[in-house]
Length: 123
Image 1 (tube, one colour):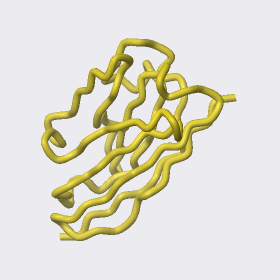
Image 2 (image 1 turned 90 degrees about the horizontal axis):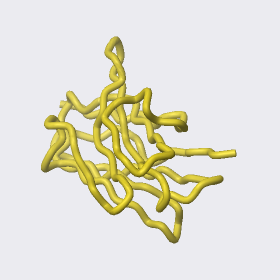
Image 3 (image 1 turned 45 degrees about the vertical axis):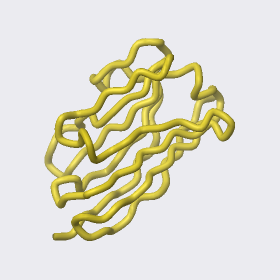
Image 4 (image 1 turned 180 degrees about the vertical axis):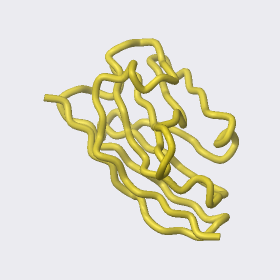
């Protein structure tokens, strides 16, 4: 059974940084497309970033240049480094895994999800 467990969320001031982690069990991250999504209160879940097989990565325009996704295959963990945080980054952040070599910006393309970790950015 595949399980994803996020950690690293918290409260940070605007301009600060956080690093989220997604520990994966039951499947190797090296053979999965891994992504981060987020959902703010009253809003739909939105794409943040993914890293596909072969290392291709893409980011939502709203986070480009501030967020970085990475994976540690030895630890079977995916990370999201978030810098220059803004109040509009406040959301519940989800890690997701897709059983495909191709990345996707659409949540319905992902097979497994974590429970989420809360990020709150104060102004």
